[in-house]
Image (tube, rainbow, N blue to C red; front, side, top):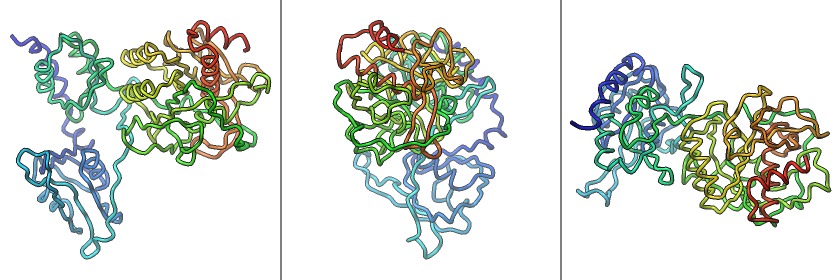
Length: 468
């Protein structure tokens, strides 16, 4: 008997429990070669096209064209599909020779949608780079229809192929350092229930949704005061220890700053790094030494700053996910960083998130994370993991900031208020938060490692707490 056979009875129940109504309300858009499956109700055409671009199809469209679409069909030739939903617009299908195709036949490359005689108005539709997150009844967030599996050597290629086939799933990619594969389940799947159903399967060490984590709860808040732009002399890059800032990215106008060693988009690998939120740019300025928090004396601010690797791990809506963070960690390791600045956190944890942080620590990265901007005393992750330095915030006069979280997991506190020339979802100004304290602590850790590259976590904590 196939060793996986027993688990597919509960899976059939889970997958079959999704109502047809829910399937229609949450749009299903799937392109299979030159055939289109579409289950949508009252959806703008733009939403449908964005999903097609995410599947690799180029779209050019007149931005004035965005009718509401109601349709339900399966595996229809794309020409017939477009004819059925585009009532007042014309379209053209562009084909290109695909040298990688075994038949050498042309493949569908681009769709152009326009009003008759006005094709010149069509513009390229840029694919979205945001995570498709959904909130669950228990308050947690996860990426829709994505399941993460951590495999053991017992899982053979044939066994994995069988598992994927039974799940109706597609293998998207793999994170080799931890043996994690990312798979897409059928649309509307109850990912948590499926993960639970396959737990304990031979060859599967962990199975869980690709949990998502919002930036909002740990972002700095603007307070009274006037921000001053950092002077050119405060753009240091003299230190050798690289700080990787895993956040919302880096604004393009700071991309050529001397303290930026590299930048990477972990949400959309290969894309040009930007920062629509501003939070990542703020933290990079602090970690680099271009901005110093208020209350840091000139005597204690002897740290010259560090080169920064800016990693976009949060999308434009302020969400990251476990798998996105794995990508980001991999880049931080490959870039030669020795400090990982994590100015965010979540009260929800995950086995794979903890494993990813453990992997980062095992590769020599010192992890520094925000304790959170709500004084609940509840642990916040990743700050509360054993291999992470949790950071609380102080006011400029050295007292505990009244909105800083506290608890046994908070290892150090640091100044958490700064004049920032870049705003977070708003204007430049004076901001406060444990995220600021975290980026500054990461900078201090880098300075300690500059002096003593062999310093371990205990030595670093001793140095950090000696001057609190």
